[in-house]
Length: 134
Image (cartoon, rainbow, N blue to C red; front, side, top):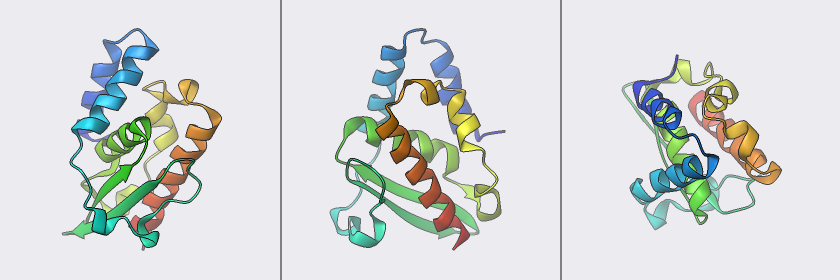
C-alpha cells in the first residue's frame, strides 16, 4: 500500500480519462514542487541514465527517507514529484520494498512514457533505492 500522498495522486488520476490530461497533471505537479537549491545540483546528486538533467538529493531524518529533486525537463520534474509522493517520508527500511513499477502502473505511466523516459524513471527509482540503502 502506498503512502496517502500517492493515493491522492491515484484518486486524482481516476477522474482523468484522457492521457493528455494526466500528462498535464504530472507537469503541474512538477511546477508546484519546491525548487532545488542550485548548490545541490552537483555531480554527486546527478542521476545517470536519464536523457535530461536530473538531480536527487537525499535527507534522512529520524530514520525516514526524504529527498529533493529537480530536472531541466518539465515532464521529468513532474515524474520526480510523483516519486516524491511515493517515497518521501517512508521509513528507510520500507523504501526498498516499494514496488514502484506496480504503483506507477496504477497511474498508467508504464504505458504512456517513451522508452527513453521509462529508462530515466527506472534510473531515478534505482537511485532512490540506493540512497535509502546507504
